[in-house]
Image (tube, rainbow, N blue to C red; front, side):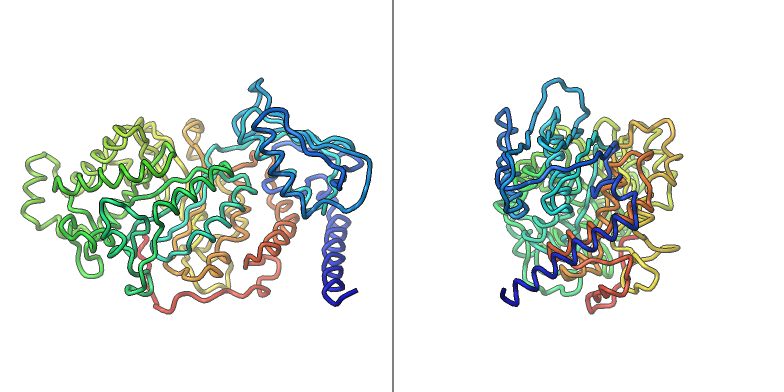
Length: 535
Ligand code: ACM
């Protein structure tokens, strides 16, 4: 036996022993299965199903057969190399429609595993659950019955690639992990002050000029996604039942576009140069309309995020520019805020004409835009009144409050890099969300479509630091979004979390270990000591 084999065997023994110890110490683990997120209903019986060389994977219809072929490949490294009597894994896409979208059943007996759903996404999630069981059991599945469906339709993760750019391979890796966690929305923050990150054919300077720089180095070479990259990533996500929502932030956070095309810049002072689009030039609206045409052609999602946040940071020249003041008077907009709202309503109308629904940060609640045209992302945790107002006005809402759902906040008391605001965002706080604030949504539950973890990257320059801020918090947000409140229990989640950490180890992800906080040290921030601009 070579040294390498001995090492591999040692590692295998260590993993098996860890799992056995966990199962002895924590009997609930037997009952709750190593699944992330915890299913709505689960029961475990005696016995197991072994995935081995004779195990066949079958599907009855075209879609099921495709998924069966994918699973067959994914099981290659897990199959046990021994001969046992033939057993079967069966995919069934039923047409009875008896399950909510994304719901599924997974039934494991010693002879047959049945995965059943009435939607392709549900069947996909059944496969992901099976894979989690197979990985944790190293080829052996416990006999069990799972009946599962999500609490929320929107289970999102937002990545800011304007402040720092991480690239295609990192995004794909995150999409893989999101799929495993049954998360279905990737919100991509692609435009902001520090860089414009998406190729727009009609406006090449957006990338030749606007993509230069990042948060800590304004001269860094241009980094952005070509339209071919975007198509590739959108398709990659779709195969994993993930919808990509691009964000084209306006009328503020527009500095990269303003550097590229100063003729449509609305000015801004000091460090907020070019922060806004010019709010009343027809040329600006023509630009936005043309850019939206290309964005809409690249992203099939029914939603486009247009930002709408923090315009006041850099709209100083709106107060002094005679053309802007005249426009406010001519259109009876009262003041600069009225002008901002006019801008939002015009963009909402553009998107309606393109057959898409606008999403905006919670400032848009006050814009007078119709709730039939827009969805609100509630982010200002210190303004629950904005959430309530959005609901009262009839908006659908996605919850992503800074506390606890911003991933750029510190996650442990001794951490020094990242944001705080009367505390930090621990994995437990994320897990428990939204139940501590759910009373604000009383009688409007149907308008809450889901929740999302947001990662702003001013203080995250390296992939290693990104991993550290995202994991394992992503597993907590996935469970907050998926598992019904009655089946959620933070202590049980924390008890099984080592299984997820093992999975991250196999992927080479550098994560924060909440059980041994010193084990994975906090990676440093970019050198520049920065003032955070996200309020
Ligand atoms: C935001 O954090 N400015 C939405």
